[in-house]
Image (cartoon, rainbow, N blue to C red; front, top):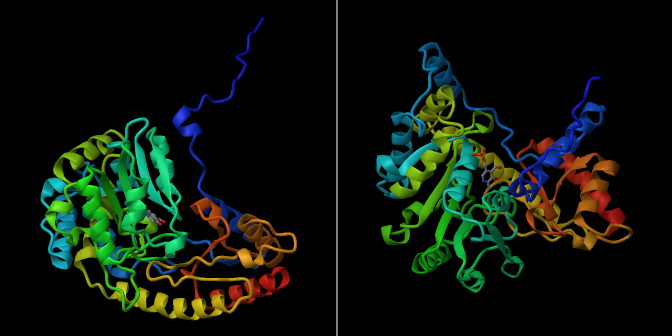
Amino acid sequence: MKTFLVMSPFPVSENVARMQSSATMAAMQAAEALRAAGANVCDFGAGEPDFDTPDYIKQAADRAMRAGRTKYTAAGGIRELTRAITDFYKREFGTEYQPNEVMATSGGKQAIFNAVVTLINPGDECLIAKPYWVTFPEVVVFAGGKPVFIETEDTGFVLTVDQVERAITPRTKLLILNSPANPSGRVLPQAQFRQIMELATQRGIYVVSDECYLRFVYAPGEVFSAASLPAEVRSHLCIAGSFSKTYAMTGWRVGYALAPADWTRAMLKVQGHSTSNVNSIAQWAAVEALTGPQESVGTMLAEYTRRRAWLLNELRAIPGFKCNEPEGAFYAFPDVRGCLKKGLKTSGEFAQRLLEEEQTVVTDGAGFGAEGYVRISYATSMEQIQEGVKRIRRFAEKYS
Ligand SMILES: Cc1ncc(COP(=O)(O)O)c(C=O)c1O
C-alpha cells in the first residue's frame, strides 16, 4: 500500500509571520487587474518615475555587456562605482568617505535591510516617524526588533527633536529618518535634522538616513544630506541612497550605503552571504549615471515641479480635502477625512470605492501609518493627472 505525505501548511518563521505585505504593491496589483480587464485606469499609485532611463546610462550598460563585464564583482561593488559615490558626496557635501565606508547595494532597499539586520537584536526598539515608508517597520520586525512609531500630524508630518526625545527609552537602538519623505513629500529642515542627529549621538542611538529622494527637492528648498553634518554627529549614521528615482533606474536595482567602517564591514558580511554583488552591468551603468551629464535630473525635477504646482492647487480646491505642500519627492498626501461620510468610513474604503467607481488608483494612507490620508503619486503624465483629478473631484463631491 502506498503512503502519502499529508502536506501541512508551510511553517513560516515567526519573524516573517509578523511582517505585513506591502500596501503599495497591493495598489499596483489592483490597477494591473483592472487594466487587464480593459478599464481606462488613472493610476496615481506608482512609486517610480514615469521617465525612461536616460540614454547615456543605457549605452554604458550596453558597452559593459559587450566588453564582457558580466562576471561576479566584489560583494560591495566595483571600485569605479564606490569611488563615483564617494566623489559625489565629496563634491556636493564636502564629505570624505573612505573606501571601507561605502558599498553598492541592490537598491536603497537592500542598504536599509543591511543596516537594520546588522544592528537590531530581539527586543531592540527602532524609532520611526509616521507616516512612514512601508518597508521600515517590516525590516525591523524581520530582525526581531520593535518599531516604535512617532506621531507627527501636529507638526505637519515634519519630525521634531522633542518628538524624538519623548519616544526614546533605554531600549532605543535605532532611528530611521527619511527626507524628502515617502509618502508625505515633506522635507526635514536642516536645523531640525542637525538637532535630531545631535540628540541621537548624545544618547548613543544609531541613525539610518534614507536619502532615496535626495535630489528631488523643490525650490526654494535645497538638497541636503546628513553627510554634510559635522563628523562628530555622523559617528552613528548610515546613509541609504539610491539610483532608482534620481536616474529613473528603478528596475536596475542599484543603491548604496555609506556608514562607519565597522558597520559597513558587518553589512558586507550579510550581503556577501545573500545576494553578493549588484548586477555587474547595472553597476557600470550606475558609474555612468553619476559621472556623466546630469541634465536629466534637472529635467525631471522641472517636470515634477510643474505637475506639483498644478496638482496641489487642484487638490486643495476639492471639497473635503486638505493637503500639506510636498517639498520633495513626487507624492501629494492629502487628508481626505472630510470625504469620509455617506457610507465611507476609512481611507481604505475611499481608495477602494474610488477604484471601483472611477477606475482611479490612489494608495491608502493606513498602510503608511496614517489612516484618513491617501497618497497620490504625480510621477505620471500631466494628461493622466488632469483626467485623474477630474475623477477624484467627481468622487469627492459625491461623498463629502
Ligand atoms: C522612502 C524610500 N526608500 C527606499 C526606497 C527603495 O528604493 P530602491 O530600492 O528602488 O532604491 C523607496 C522606493 O520606493 C522609497 O520610497
